[in-house]
Amino acid sequence: MLPYEALEAEARARLPEAVFDYYAGGSGEESTLADNTAAWGRLRLRPRVLRDVSSVNTGTELLGARLASPVLVAPTAFHSLAHPEAERATARGTREAGSLLVLSSRASRRVEDVAAEAGPWWLQVYVFKDRGLTRALVRRAVAAGARALVLTGDTPVVGRKRRDRGDSALGLPEEDFLANLEGLTRRELAEQAPDVTFADIDWLRELSGLPVLVKGVLRADDARACLHHGAAGLIVSNHGGRQLDGAVATAEALPEVVEAVDGRVPVLVDGGVRTGRDVLRALALGARAVLLGRPVLWGLATGGAEGVRRVLDGLREDTARTLALAGVPDVSSVGADLVARTLWR
Ligand SMILES: Cc1cc2nc3c(=O)[nH]c(=O)nc-3n(C[C@H](O)[C@H](O)[C@H](O)COP(=O)(O)O)c2cc1C
Ligand SMILES: CC(C)CC(=O)C(=O)O
Image (tube, rainbow, N blue to C red; front, side, top):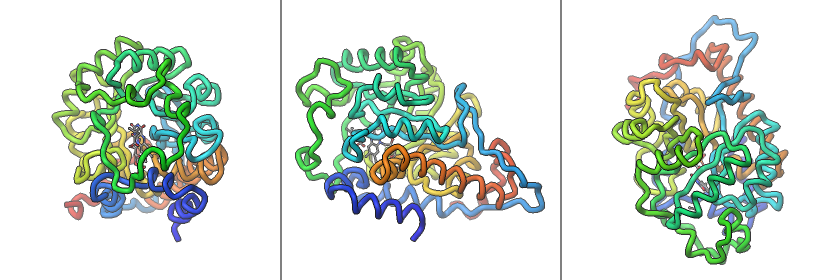
């Protein structure tokens, strides 16, 4: 079994079935979920030979943050389903690994408590129907030291997951569901705003004074519109195959977005990144960094903060070995020549 498969199997054995299915599952027929991993695997590599790789540097700088590798933690909801220390453990493991946490608006612990354990972190923003809830959360995140906001653009409504057994099967306590929605006592009021638009990028930037990245971009025209509204970075993502099923795999969408952005802001990518080879493929297609969703949840479920650290350290080591095998001594010198584009169609 590959290390990722073994980790997932261990998490599956530990978690209640409904929780595992909530984390692992995708929407619709799960075709995008399957495609994400498969699409990275289809990209063939073109290693360089006879380069001195006696020292390989995976260190990366991203919007002012120094990171041990170009791998970040993607925002995922409700970590208390995986571990009693929840997002506090995720934050600690991420910091110990020298990575950056993107904290979900749907975190099950208060942002202030998570921030106390975190290294550099960004807040993922869902715009709620009641924009006052979003405003209050953003203000708290700024006060607690968030360095950027990540507006998720692909979730005006929540995708229907085929393995969903309903909220009650998850057993998520009400206070965990509402952890960051101040004063809210009923779940219904925490609905996504279906009228979220590009103008909300401007709103969030003015409200917070922080750089705003947009997550969920899969097209060149949307990428250009985000830049027009002052986005400081883009994340090519299909939400791990949990929103519009049938949406293009992120490895396929990335080149189009990179081309449209033309180096003006960093482009990141997530979805099905599991190995150092996948990290190399993403960088070769022009991404500055990748984000990990489910692998971090499996690390948390199997080992708390230490489990999260192990997952991130493991991927950093795999990335370093991959770079050495590809003849690349420094992540910053990964270029488009590393992938065979003729086979990629
Ligand atoms: C259980 C789960 C919860 C998620 N919750 C959020 C969320 O609250 N906000 C968000 O922007 N994305 C959310 N995502 C999407 C991730 O940020 C990310 O795009 C995706 O998981 C990356 O794919 P991967 O899991 O294959 O690595 C969630 C994904 C999962 C699996
Ligand atoms: C509460 C949901 C909107 C969280 C999420 O983004 C997801 O489960 O994919």
